[in-house]
Length: 443
Image 1 (cartoon, rainbow, N blue to C red):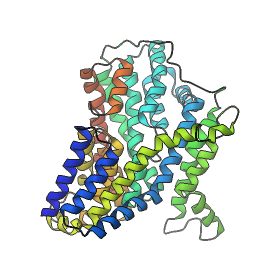
Image 2: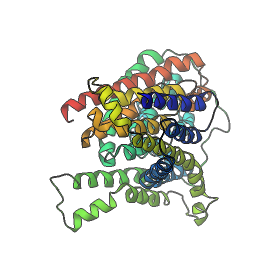
Image 3: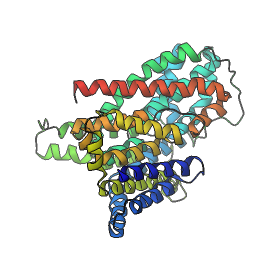
Image 4: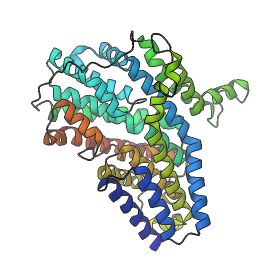
């Protein structure tokens, strides 16, 4: 029981370090992992080995994926491709359905781009469309924010789901497919929540002369803008189909080619190459350390390091033998799919970062998959999505995204809590209920 107690102590240390003392999550996770190893009396050689195996294993599986996903997002953002996607979605939905168009725009854009970046880019469009359509600005803005939230936590290649899938050992293509299904369903109650409770919030959009999104030259076509997002997803999904036990594409050269180009690293690398065609005129300087590739490295590095530190923590837990201890404690509890959700939900609400919550939870749950009955192929996928569902809520004052939403729109803290914060709760609960239902149907 001391091992379980020390696990809680390590988690408390990590949370307090991040939330109260503003320690970087990488340092908090890394030091917390080493401290846990020392507390439970692990041999120093095993602690060092856990650090090497945990960090190296996660980096080999996930680090490059995160960097490539961020690269695609940077090129979409800086060329105005993200804006093109939003405008195209608006043309499909129609200006009379501005709220739905902004929700879907946020949803699509946050697959390759960080949620707060999506909101910052799209907020000027929200203001203009709110005035033009006479739909309340608060409703349009929260629709954008919740749309971005749904895919950010549930659909790779955003860093959180990629990291969780890698740590849990879930098939990434299947996580994408089921993540798209679950996250799209969460938009339905979120949309009606906004119509019922957010439409009445009085908020007038304020315009500034410098709110235009910076673009370099002419915007890319809609086809070129969608291609770096859609094509890699298609490749990964086809590879997942090719890997089914029934082998629908056979076992010959065709199947091997599909499996190769559809492997997440190659698929996202192809997506990154496709994003290089987004600028009106390609300049090799964009690929330099001071260009957009350099910007991608700067954005991706903290997430990659946090993911690695989470891997160290997970390996330390695994090597401590906590799985056997928890097995005896939880064998009759029947937590199942709800345990990863509750842990992720608690971590997100306590410290604010969805990515940190997902990485930490995945690291805790990975050694317990057999104990919880979550070690089958499908249940690993649903475990990743349950972790992502928990990491959606509750976005409040300790979440940078909450401040991006409130400060850029002019919502008061109370209005932000009543709209954005509760909206993430609605979305989170919907997601886990859908996942729980799916476990009965296909688990």
